[in-house]
Length: 162
Image 1 (cartoon, one colour):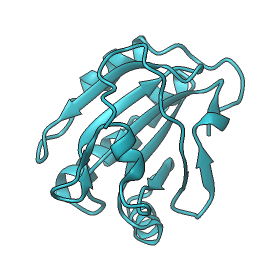
Image 2 (cartoon, helix red, strand yellow):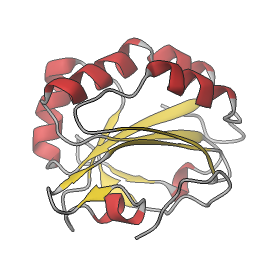
Image 3 (cartoon, helix red, strand yellow):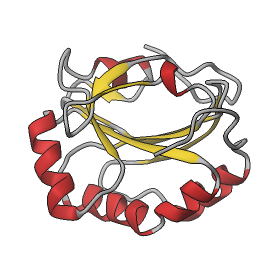
Image 4 (cartoon, one colour):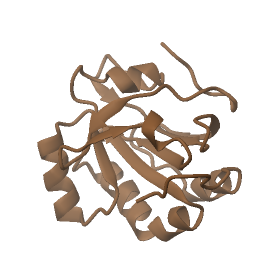
């Protein structure tokens, strides 16, 4: 299991479907800063509160040319319904199969309970981890942690974020 707790580590690449079935490849996003948000469960109270807060503050990420990718182990069909109901305008990635493989590569899979832990990785345009924000199950990540990490995140160098 990988532990990406230190800035300077390369972010493991992946390709996963978003809520619309479009494949999102992290390596193809080189040149764009990425905020990779692992969350345990779609439709749960705490996760919904966190993702709602991301949606409400999406302009802060865009102003730093950072693309938000939220990831859970839920199936993409559930994520599509979730995104439509909540009005999310960022990608919800499905790490459904193989079950939690990307969460495991990032060291955030809770294999005893079958879900991703509540961790966010800030990845610079070169694919290097710059910061990480975590919270235990049942607690929200403080949005001030996102704001502080965004300040350390270099902006876009090539491709435009969504």
